Image (cartoon, rainbow, N blue to C red; front, side):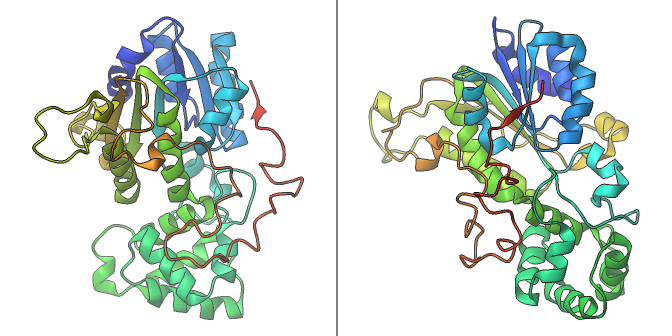
Length: 363
C-alpha cells in the first residue's frame, strides 16, 4: 500500500522543508518510498529494534543528511523531535504490529511455523515470551491470552502451560505450538486459522507492552503535528484499530450540547478525519502481499493549532510522552499494581535500562 500511504501524506509532505516521521521504520520500505516521492522532505525514522535500524540505515544511505534514525519507541516522538531540533512534524506514519523482518528472523521467536527461542522482543531489552510463560500464574496468563489474543480457550491453555513448565521450562516455540494443538479442541482448530496464532499474538503484545504504548503514542504524535500535517495509522488487528479509532474520534468530534445555533470557534475540533472509516487493501494488494489482508488504515489532519481549553476535549489529546518504565506499572486494564513482568524488567535507574541514557541517534 505504498502508493496509498503516499497519497494520504502528500498534502503534508509536498511542503518545502517538510518533516516526515516514520514511527515504525522496520527495513525502511515506507521511508524510502516517501523520500523518493517527496524530495523536499526529511526523515525521522524511529524503531526500537537496533537490527532494523542497521538494515534501514544501509538502505537509506543514498539520501544522506535528509535522514535521521533514532532507536526509540514511538510513544517517545515528542522527545525524539526535541532531540533533533524539530518543534513539530508534517507527516507521521504508524505501521503497527510485528514487522516482516522480525517474522523472518528465526531467532526472534515471532513465527509459530518454525522452532525458535521464545523471545518476541521487538527491541533488545526486557523480559521475553519465555519469561511470561514460565513465571505468570494461570489467572494472569489467561488474562493475557483472552484480552490480547481474544483466545476462547485462554484458561484451558494457561492451566496446561503452568502444568507443563513444572516438568520443564518453556524455551522454544515448537513445544508451545504442540501444547496449543493439544489444548484447543479439534473442532475449534478447524476454523479461525492456525491454533497458535492468537496465543503468539497475545504473548508478543504482552512482552512489548504494545497496546499501552500505542495509547500513549497517538495523542503524543498529535500533540506535535503541524497545522496541515497528517498522521496515518496502519493496524492489523481489532485491538490496535480500536485504540486508533477512539483516539482519532476524541480529537475530531464536535463535543458541545446539541441544538446550539452557533458553535463557538474555541469549541471546534482542531483536527479532522481524512479517511471515512477504516480503509482496506484491495484485491491486487492482498495478492501481492498477503499480510495486507488484515490491514485497516485511518488518517487525520490538523486544521488549526491545538486548543487546550476546548470544551469536551480529552485530556489525552495533548498528552506528552510518558517514558518507558515510568507509568507502565498498573497501566494495563485489570492488572494489579505489581504486574508479573515488573520483577523481570530492568529497573528505571539501572544503567542497562533504555531510559537511563539519552535516546541514541544512530544516523
